[in-house]
Length: 68
Image (cartoon, rainbow, N blue to C red; front, side, top):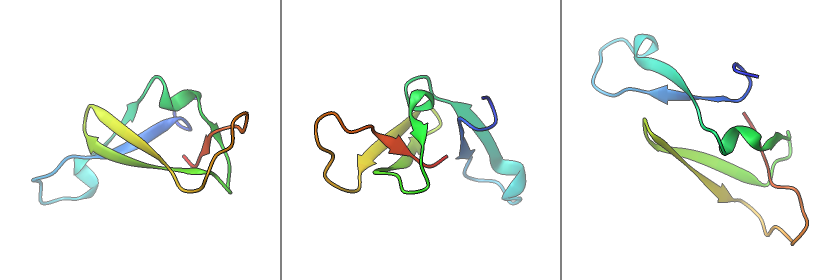
């Protein structure tokens, strides 16, 4: 679960891009199911938060899915 339900966090200001990557486990986000044809996208706002946006209309009762 840890490797599949985490998001990459890019820490700004370093010369080596690979060395400035980390990962974060976001409690609510990690409960979403994965889909290759997901109905949301995520965007990290900072090290401590991630925003989730619908990329299509999601009807009531439809599972909210993402790609991680």
